[in-house]
Image (cartoon, one colour):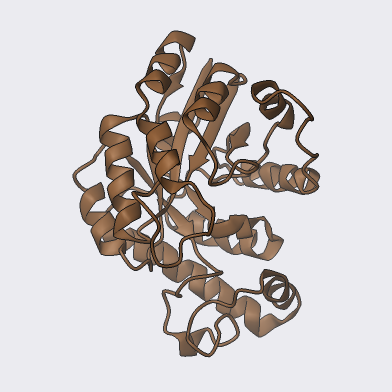
Length: 279
């Protein structure tokens, strides 16, 4: 059986994102969205989610390029002079690994984001992290620890089969993912923690560049097992959006009638993480 979750990241970052998530779920094939609990439009995202009971809403942990859930003075080593998370991921990662007080702040902030999600009253469908920062072993530990308290059932480990991408777009195969072996270790760790983790994830190499043709190609070449395709739809650019991302194109891909037809034709089971948890 081929099972598929199609996710939108950055839910709550801006109204432009929230509008796209709602449209892609109601009119298209989007089944899940990952919520930034401290995003500029988080309240709007939660209000919309409450009207879409079939949308699996998860937690998008933010530990870079965003605001903390805790007051900045409680996580001084994680934030800059403006009270926002530091943007130098390498420097932050090293500090989290080797400085005890930074690790304590990290664990407190991760717990605070889980608690903020719980306060929305929404069911926790899955957990992942902005820029996949949860691949850092200490962040993964914090996520698993907090997740045990908050009924976490699923998480993302972005293992992306590059041969599938090459089959969709002929020519020189995409370069080998240097993080692949590390990601597989994280996937094994998450599974040992009892979590549902996709067998493969697409959206990494084509981040911000999933066109209708590429999405249909992924559907038509979908491997067996549980797959997640993650996207970044928005109705347009917004403050903090990534330069060069095709937000509107990704929205169109999600509402493309041909994509829905391809899912039906291929006999793919579409759902949220909770609908597949334990399967």
